Image 1 (cartoon, rainbow, N blue to C red):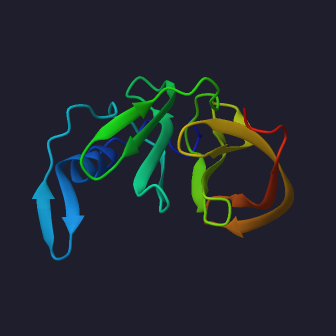
Image 2 (image 1 turned 60 degrees about the vertical axis):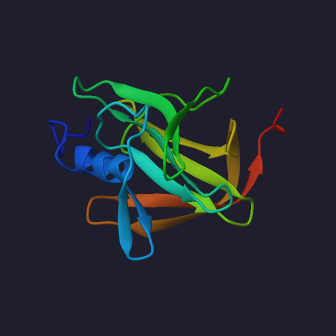
Length: 159
């Protein structure tokens, strides 16, 4: 984990899972949900909303023992489903995800294992593929500059 935070922060993440797994938003109302399965408790994970498939994609994080996680989950508003793709990014935490509306896929970048990662992966709703970006931008946060990648092209065609 980063030297900035030597111990995992588990306060907000269980609350987030509580909100996502207990309540689904409806116009002006909340409805309690009771999913059969849920991701394990974790910190420093990444979530992104997939507007084409109408679900939330979760990848990785770190468990209460400080171990990096490498699982993929989707939330459809009612149930969590664990995906089991053949190829997937290495386990990681403190990574970033965004949704690419042009290519209709979730994009995952970087993170730690605890060494820093500088790789980019895309999720098409059923499988992960590692890509090589051809342009790089960055945004600055109080902690560090986070590279953002645009105009991506696959290193190899998805199988």
